[in-house]
Length: 444
Ligand code: PLP
Image: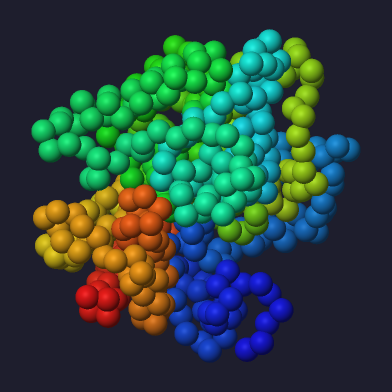
């Protein structure tokens, strides 16, 4: 098929998606794909959910758009009330955007302006972690720690500093306890702050659970508590990126609830609108809001589509359905089932080194040899082959290469919709098993 779209991969022919119902997407040939990744951890309610469609219709009938420099709207206000009521302690306000990268850009500027408002304009550094992904716009790419994504744009990026991720499977030493490892990894932040100058750092940015670049990597217990302590000690803001891992994906509305900490600023997106509309948001603490209110009286930022009424109406409906249908309970239950099934299928697989994640956010990491954790030659593109084999079997998963350092390693990320049932999970694992074996056969 000829196309005028600059597609993600120019030499790849994409099936045409024409419909979706529940956990399935259908293409123009009538083939159905079991959506085990929610696209990129987006479609938390699956496809074609009648309540969300109804809410969007109702809003479209009333008002599709009103610019935020003239008006506020009911769906935007109602959604903000809900987001604040369910937010981590101290969060008092919401700043709307249209996606994850925009949320991170806004968070970075918000953090910088906060310090300026408080008379600390010398704070100019961001610290983030290697092997993180925060988006593709220049600010988000700057704090992102994926070498491959950064490389050709490096001359354009703002200076950001990177410490190690908290990645037990790859970085905990054999003799080290979990506690000792968590502390060592977190203490890298303190060392970096001291190296840059104690009062020169704006914020530390981290995904609470690392998503796309390393594959559902949860931090060792205690890591984020120590990070919070260090941030507080030096007046450094903690920005948590929950664009992918947040809004219920790990079994609690916010992933940081399971770490026992609250961030100063949090970015959310994907699961907020579940793909029914493009929407993201930045959640901020009262003291940040107060600094703006008593200072310049505004946040110096803005986009045309902030707080889009259609997007807010869809997101509000998505969040109401998650609560009404007690879907976080299902995320927890199906998450355990997924973990059991993955362990059955891959626990003794000679090329699966790690099965990890939380809730309906899990991954398998592929290795050449389990004993030494060596990886397949990246030139063989194992992750690309797994994706193709899965699609051929009517399964959508989210494989990625460069798990370890942006170049080496392969993993497959799973993020099925919160509405999935045991049968769906069983089908996902069965098809994934076949796809992985077929892909490995081709590269081995
Ligand atoms: N942050 C994280 C953790 C993400 O996973 C993503 C997207 O995958 C982004 C930010 C960027 O979001 P978007 O693609 O909506 O700009």
